[in-house]
Image (spheres, rainbow, N blue to C red):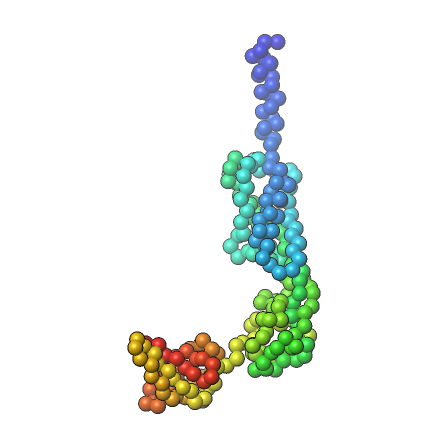
Length: 228
């Protein structure tokens, strides 16, 4: 057999193999898992990640470099979706189903809380569980309740969320307050009456002695600051 014939035969044997080459599903799965580990590295608790690999019989052209991403509306939390696109060697993208489980401590109330009740660490205790199965905004550290008040009634033993707490009111509606006006080179104080409730740092309207209504920033101790 001539050298040309042998070369043609070898090429004929190789081409079908190349034509049947598909993307290694483990390569895709690993890229998605590594991406999710990076996305969740700062989450509290124990992280467990599972990703559904593409079919072993997929018809995707083999890729040299993959890029993982989260589709709009997805996040690395609970049942989610991870996008994978090929950025070198081919041109395709796909979406994989995944699950991110986060097992850690969260806060539950030790007794029923009433609206406006000031909280301390004795009002909560920790419980371990699957955080992704709990409501959004769940609190995980007793320090998160210090200096806060309950904004709604919360039953005993219930998981505590951030939206169930508020900062204490710095001024209350109808309260006599001291209004401090500041500007370049001057500071003037006057008395007024708060026209609403506000926590420290929030905007509140005040009727000052002249009868005018002004807006300022509520501060602890019944103060309202107005900067000019």
